[in-house]
View 1 (cartoon, rainbow, N blue to C red):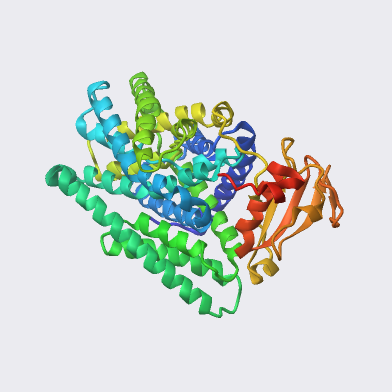
View 2 (view 1 turned 90 degrees about the horizontal axis):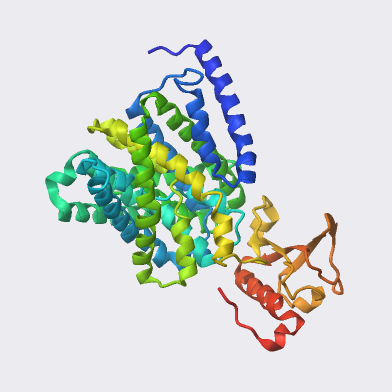
Length: 501
């Protein structure tokens, strides 16, 4: 198949227009409380054979491009994740990504077979592909919901880690290896591939960080490219030794993202941009792969019924079982149950049986597509309401502000943004009475849309936004002190309140 310059021009015209529309869709989706990736799927459907007329039916190409995009998305997830924030919830996150996935697969498979009449192979595949949560979908909604770190850490760790066991399981079932080797061998294979993938990721992450700290590259723009290439190398290296490449890429990115590397801010911004581009291309492509003419009332009915099993039975039970390793209050467990957004990643996983030619794979693709759209529309917009009803929201917390600033990188400092909520006792406190750790200081106060350089006697008010520069090694003590004053006012130094999660 030839590809001349005129086709290239057309491709660039259509591709740039679609990408710009997708970027603008982020604004629309954030106002509606929907994951923007859902809009990308629908854009792909509109461009497909039932809309503009672009035909795309190559399942093997979709499988390859889907995996390439997931590598970039997982790399960005690891590079932008704070180990300090997810570490307290890591046990629960790992449990959700392993035990939780197993429980979810079992419940959905049994329910789909006995209640919906699907053959065992399709029932297990349906349970497997829908067991993984989608980090992009979850955090595009949770970005506007202030939550305790143990909740955000659990969700972030789960969504970053559960792709790996899910992919291994789907591949084993799709290729028939699971039926030939039995359950025990299948479990052993999954455990081996995950463990080896983690080791590969750790080796590449720590080794790459050591090299990057000592490399004197001639341009600062080369550092982000080098770091991203290291994460891709971790994936390819993991696959080369027959381990989980997805586990390797996420672990390597997590190590690199939390290492003291040159130009960390530029690296994170670059990885976020690449991940957005990968997400847009991936989910528009998946929308193109759908043939609306294949959808029937039976398919829609099966999708709705399977979604009910997943959302109201499998997810809550998997959360409860997973929480045995790290108990949490029932309100937070309830929110975790409702926050298990699947997004479009399950659709990516259906390209595996499609490319392997599994009987009924097209039917599975259609069922999962409808499930994703319907239940993302149901759960996504309601997450802020559910958080308020369950009383798991948390306001007035210091929040990271990603800022590209070389001086901060050179002095190993962080810039915090703090909003003084109406319930905070920081109202009326003078700047000098905060008594922040040595080296930390308020650099700017934003009040009623105007900026003000603070003095020692400046009085803080409800609604103020504070920009605070703190040495990275003193960040935890700075946040702790801010929480103490927020709860105890200027008397906090005598009340000596302990920080709460």
